[in-house]
Amino acid sequence: MKTILSVILIFFSFSSFSQIKFEKEKDDFTGASSVNTHYTFIDKIRQSENKSEQKKYNQIGNRLALSMKYQKTDQQEVYWVNLILNKVDLGCLSKYDGKMLVLLEDGTSLEFHQVSQTDCSSDYSKVSYSLISKEGFESLDDEGYLNKKLREFKEKSIKKIRVHGTKYYADFDISEEKKFILADNVNTIESNK
Image 1: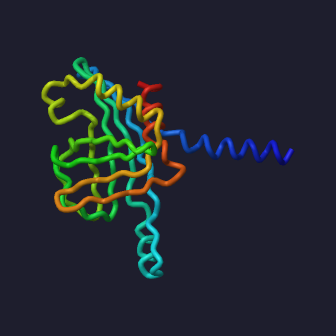
Image 2: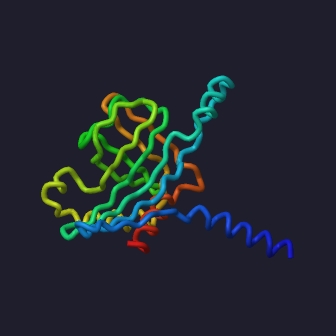
C-alpha cells in the first residue's frame, strides 16, 4: 500500500509541474481570440559562498518569471513570451532592439525579439518577446518559421535564458523542474485555442 501511495504522490508531484494555468478571451468587437498562460518563476536562486551575499540572494528570491500569450485575428496568429524581471539591472529593455536568447539542452539556441514598450526600471520589469524576426513584422511571412520553432519547444528542454538590455545582459539558469516550461506553455495554448 505504501508503494502504491508513493507512486501516486510522485506522479502528482511531476504532473503538477506541467499544469499551466491559463485564461481564454474573445474580443466581442474584433473577434480576436487569445489564450494567456499565468506567470511561473523558472530560474534557480543564485548561490554564493559568501554568507552575506547568499542572504541577499535569498531575500531577492527568484528573478525571472515566464508566461506566454497566443492571439488569433483574421489576418494572423501570434505567440509571445512574456517575462517579469525582478531586481535585474540591464540598462533599458528596448523595443525592437531588445532580445532574449534561449539555450536549449541540446546546445541549439532560439532568438526572440522584444515587442513591448521600452522599460528602464531595474526593480521590476515586464517585457514581451516574439519569435517573429524584425523583418517578419513587416512581411508577416514567418508562419512556417514560427511553426518550426514551436515544434522545437514541444520537444526540447531549456538550459538557460539570456536577456539583453541596452547596457548589460543577464543569464538565468533554469531550475530542473521548469526545464520544459516553454513546452508546457505551448501545449497548454495549443490544446485550448
